[in-house]
Length: 282
Image (cartoon, rainbow, N blue to C red; front, side, top):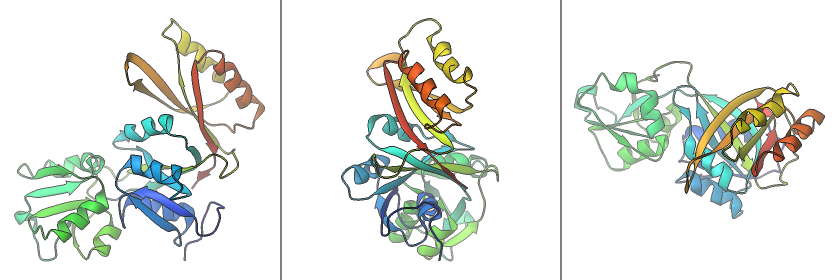
């Protein structure tokens, strides 16, 4: 039985997008152990809502993939919704071409999966020009769908666990474009659920459109030798050509350097939100 790597109250409920066999569930098991109480959700917004409305204590969301890049919907939700990041982990992602038992490659006409999974397997899928690619809300959910609907001419792309859970056959294993396929996941909670502090600190901020202001904003970290390990910009809804900047700092918010840098940044940024300061779970 897998033990939790994050010290949390016993019987904590953990929300994630998808159903049994989803990669987010695997990441949740890595962090919380195999005895976690799962709260499957249909969409990323539902995941955040489950924690906000106290149907779950924690949530696990994917935020970045080494092949497909950032997951922008979840970045936007981090800025808008009142949850904080309390941990980070990563997971090796192996995608598999899953079909009904007895089905062969020649009879498959459609493939279902999450858009990110379809993109991560684009090289494999290009070999089959007549194969229709159909986006689905979740990888594991796509396996359940073709199983429940009896779609013998359809395949799904998902995990080994999803194939096992729904009694389906893996026709091709490891079909992702590159074996170095990892997804980074964030663990979320309501404020005050866990103490702040750890290896990384995440922030999001907005700036006035003035010459040199972004350089000045980033320099508050350079002046204090704080490493920026990730920078992402996202457009602000309703404000054309204005952006929010998401930054991951290799620093604990409790450190003198980090606290001074954020105080300095507040003088430059009309909007600044600390997304969390947290440990990285290997």
